[in-house]
Length: 161
Image (cartoon, rainbow, N blue to C red):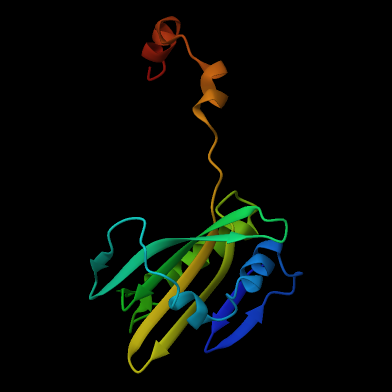
């Protein structure tokens, strides 16, 4: 389920509420301002460009069983992209949300989009995107795939012919 937070009103898709959205709601994240005001401990330096900024922080939220759930909260302010569809500009996160939705419609694997929202407050345009942390496999899971590159060299040399 994807929850769209727009103009202070939460709009939900017609699917049942996801467990991830329930975990976040139980932790007090129910509207745009809850996410926007959360601590600003960014995972990398703030991206300042296009007359605005964007940054990513991690939300660690326990579920009802006490297991930690990690989400990435992306915040953006006045970082606009212009196109024929958006001649006055749209937050670049808007394009990101559209890409998530398009990938989902084709059943392509991608990060799980939990919620997003966009606000225009007195000429300041803000956006948030929340995704679930993607569990990356450990290196040990790939060790059985060790390739004998020396044996493959003849085939690789002929691949482009």
